[in-house]
Length: 102
Image (cartoon, rainbow, N blue to C red):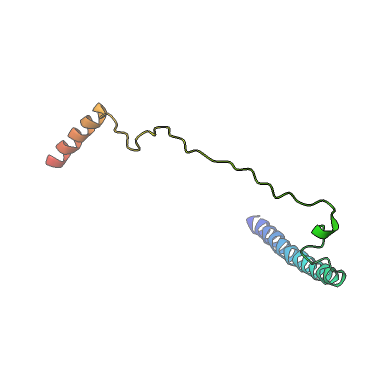
């Protein structure tokens, strides 16, 4: 029965690949059609949906507030922190040295 199951699995894999290619082709076709229509009607311009600055009656204010950022003077901890020697490591080092000697 494992041969039949393998055939069914391979069929589903091939069907999946075929549908992926088919829907990719359909997506590409629609994107080309809508892209063409967008160019014709002028929707592809970058500023199409933005309002023009001349059309508004209000003028933008050019007042800038001066803010000074003061650097913080907090002491920083040293980056290298020494650890205490571990007594268990000494035991393992001695054991390793004994193995190397014998």
